[in-house]
Structures are given as C-alpha cells and as structure tokens.
Length: 365
Image (tube, rainbow, N blue to C red; front, side, top):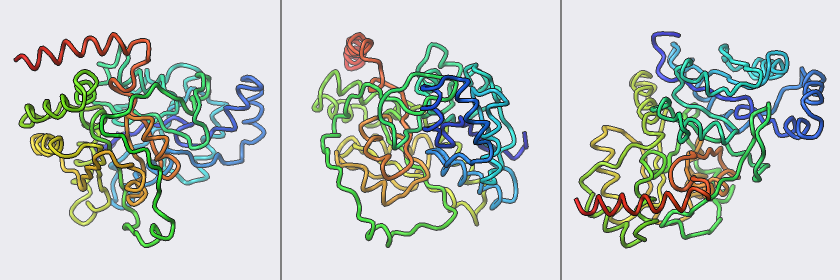
C-alpha cells in the first residue's frame, strides 16, 4: 500500500450499496435464485447505500491532495461470480476502489487485520459485534466498526451469504435522553444552511462512541444523581477510550496530511446528550488526549436530529439505536454496537450486577 496512506476503510457491499431487493430475493428464492437475479441484472447498477456518501467523499480527498491518503476496500461474503454486479456498480459510479475480497461465505472479519483496516462498515450486526465486543475483539483493538442502518428496514434479519442489511438491538436509553421529540428542521430552513462543497463532515456521539461506556454503566447502577456525583468526583480524570477514539485520531492526522490549504475538507462534530457538570470531564478528556473536535454540542437530553440535519454529515455514529432510528431518516447513520446499551438482554442482568461491584470498588478507592 502507498506510504502516504493515512486511513483504510473496509466496507461490505450492503453497506456501500442498497441491497434491500437482493436480500429479499435471497430469502425468498434461495442462493440460486439470488445468483440468477444478479446475472440477469449485471449491468443494472446498485443504488447507493448508507455508507456511499462517506466512501465517495473520503475518496475525493485523494484527488484534492494529489496523493493517496485514503484507501477503501470492498469486503464481501459473495463469491467472485456473484460479486460481478458489485464490481460493475463500482465502475458505474467511478469509485476508485481497486482492492477487494470476495470470500464465498467466509466471515469477512477474518481479513480485516490483514487489510490493516481502521474503519469497518457493514450491514451485519454480528460482524460489528465480532470486532467491538466479541470473544476475539482484543485482536481488533484500535479498529472502529459500525452497523449502517438502512432507512427502509428497521426489523431484525438473519445472517445470510449477502451482508445482513439491518438489525435491531436491545436498547437502553441514555440517562439524559428523555426528550422524545422528533421535530425536524424544515427544508426551507435547511436550504439556507450551506457548507463548503467537498467537505467531509463526520459526527460522533460521546459515551459509548468516542468515550467508553463508563458513564452508561454508572447511570444504570447509581441513577442520575449518582452519575453526576461520579462525574464531579472524576472530572479531572480523562474518560476511558471508546471504540471510535482511534478513528477520530486517524481523521485528525489525515487532516494534517491534507495541508493547510485543504484541512477544511474534514470537519468533526461531537453531539452528546451530556450537559452541566458532565461537560467538564469531556473537555478535560479531549485536551489530555490531544484530540481536536471542531464542534462540540452538549444537548442535555434534546433530540439530536435537528442538529444533525443542520450539520448534514457524511455519516453519524451513535451507540443508541433509539437515536439512530430517529436520525437515519435524515442523515446517513451507523450504530456503534458497543457497551452496556448493546448487550443482549440475557446478558444484561449479570453485567449490571458486575458493574455495581466495579463502581462500588472504584468509589471506595
């Protein structure tokens, strides 16, 4: 790979393109019916999917910088023959994606380390769990992963030879996510909000995304007042790293490599439900890490959606499916399946009991 490379993104076909129809055919007609459909529609380009905007805008940075800083790699459980339509679609949209893995049914996460992946986008929940919270997740330390959430499908699907298009996880609402308003910014108002053309805007949630799920665990064991007390006591201590922290640093380094004239092309946002005393620890953490976030929005429980509409990001990362389901109607969204909010229900009770002991021990120190 080029020595100038700063960021490697691996994406599945169903994250890059909209494969809703293809999955329906696979489930209805089986693998042979699916293959026949792909052959019959070989020259019909797949429509852009949730991850397309991010991939396209990142790859455009190489042209602006006049050097290859970003590599996007397609990884798919299709075989080479079935994947021909995906390759034709990549060619149709003139995406400079030249490296690919077609595994013929093998889990693509087996090859992410070999590709030196920094960010993995997929439509299969199990693959995200493998990277972020599976038994082998330590091997993927420093690698970000997220489940792209298709606007059409909000119900669980079973895994198949084609990447799973969407999935619904058990959800626990954040302590300050109490405002269930879905008011959105009007299209007239949005028309007056302009961002520079060619700018890649990426929005992160805080706890469970940039930071660990420590705050979530404290809230579940101690309640809201206990959470604020914990934050006051630990305000001078940086929050533990979350699953997207290394990726955020990669973006910072990428921006530096773009040079002074082009660093505006990457803009990062933190949009969090935190407020009041909980803000202090965030600022301390970012300063101690040396991580530069262009905009920080502390909403104190307000609906994130209008802010996301105003930002109009290439992608929004959040660990809460509740937030994702509201946002995905308006902006490309991906769920970071990590932490106590995304533990399967059968494991949740045991996990909380363990966390109670952990928090009690920490408070006694």
